[in-house]
Length: 214
Image (cartoon, rainbow, N blue to C red; front, side, top):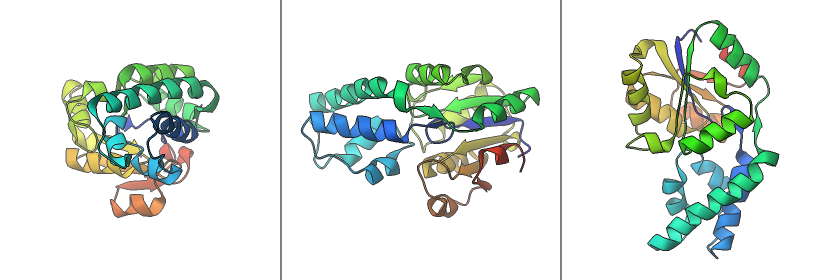
């Protein structure tokens, strides 16, 4: 992919957080005695913030204090699990290193809070490759709204035709389309190739190294 500016999703794109996210979510719902969502349901909503997905996964309307406690419990559970379960996908560090050597501008745009995102990137030893790191607390509207991409494009004076969004979820591809930039779906994350294909991405790849050799 011959782009100067590359915006990456984090979960399911740079890092394998599936098991961590599923367990933390199920533990949080169990702790509040709510119906526990299946792994498939949790995976479907990966890519959008828990502030949105948890309401969709709950089998009833949540009370305000209950909802806040659910989010807090999830974050506590995730932090406990991440050191053992969060891993960087094979060849991602090498790909990022090569991109930086080629003087590409790299960004991370995630549905995680920025402080958690930075902590995760640092623990995986890939944080230094990125020009900026943008979490859900830095946008006015969550994925698939294009707010995050548009903010990056405007702040760093990027040309849209030189910019691509790379992600494993349909929400990343929908966001890129709404922002009028190119999109690249990756099949090693939460959403299956068939789901990604329906969004008609500009690129769809199955191997990490295809990010630099395709």
